Length: 179
Image (cartoon, rainbow, N blue to C red; front, side, top):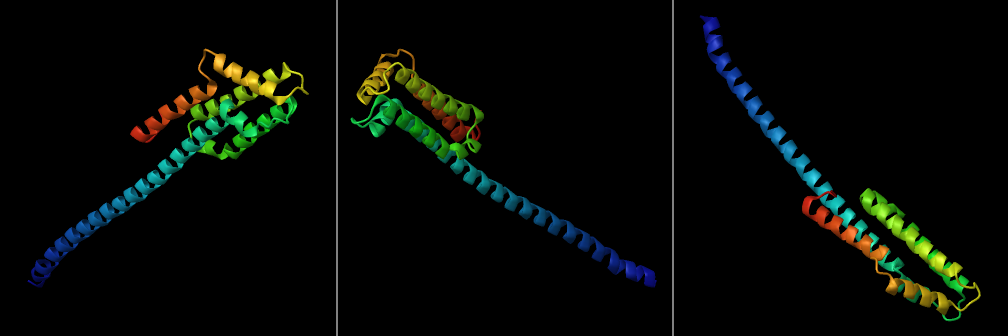
């Protein structure tokens, strides 16, 4: 009879204990998952902000090395062709080096495009400068560069790069990742 009496109290207590354990465990797991999801979403928001800032920096870089913008910033009427060529080359390389760290936030396609534009701009300036006497006035290089830009029927490398960056930013904004 004592065994029956002990079982009468012990079995319901064990059932209540097991049910309580399962409920508390499920609650704690649910809370942990919610916290992990919140942390993940916060990290995604930070990452998205960093990526968008990197795309902004890439657009700014492309705009700053655009020949129309660049020449007006570095040109001085007292310069020679060689001086202007060196100033443009130095400025493009400095701007690029200033933005090197942004490559970790943008897609490989955008980074390769940006590097390609930098090289194309440097090649164009150097090619045009080599066709002129180094001691000639810088206005000759200035005029030739603007002439090449205005007479080319193809899209300028800077315009192509801006289109690629803008399309990728739209994709990142819509889907959260570059396609």
